[in-house]
Amino acid sequence: MIFLPLIMETCAGNSCLRAELPLMPIDLLVPLYSLPPREEGAASVRDSGVVIRRANPFELTRVREFICRHFAQSWADEVGSTFARQPLPCFLALEEGRIVGFAAYDATRKAFFGPTGVDAAVRGRGIGRALLVEALWGLHDLGYAYGIIGAAGPVAFYEKAVGARPIEGSWPGIFADLLQKNVPEESRPTENS
Image (cartoon, rainbow, N blue to C red; front, side, top):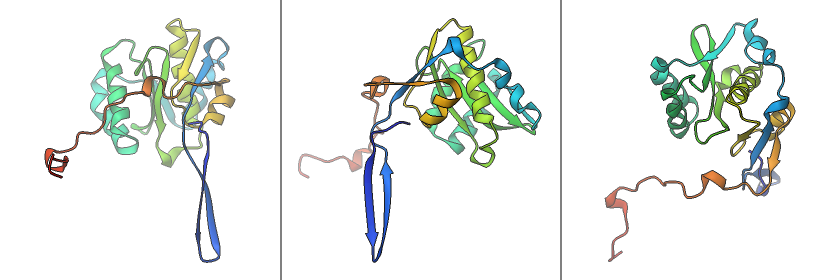
């Protein structure tokens, strides 16, 4: 995500640790009429033993389990919404028959890319970029001229890979007024507390 940075510094004894903490994410706009060639999608990782293909409806449980284990239940919920449509707008990266990554589109909103993720154990091999290219071509094939990467993660990656551009003033956008986790009744304050 691109953020306005918040600089934090923690000191103990003679040493200090300085870190930039995220404050505010931003959406990115991707011109789908100037995407990298399709060959930079699935074909780019095939020789390394990674297969990228559309998910099948009967794989919903395994996909949700992978996403919950490596990322977040809310992401699994978003991706789950794609499994009722054809062609299914979710791509999987498989290595030796197991899921190592995924990318969805048209899940949260029309023309939105994501969520997406690659198992930390296999990052750095081009799998994320290949999934990105496949999914954005999926949006292109639906007739969209632009795609949106909501609350974007690694902005520099998206800028370099597909020419994404920040959409100023886009936060919180579709992420405003989200549901909060329910608090058990016994934990709620009472009139007497």
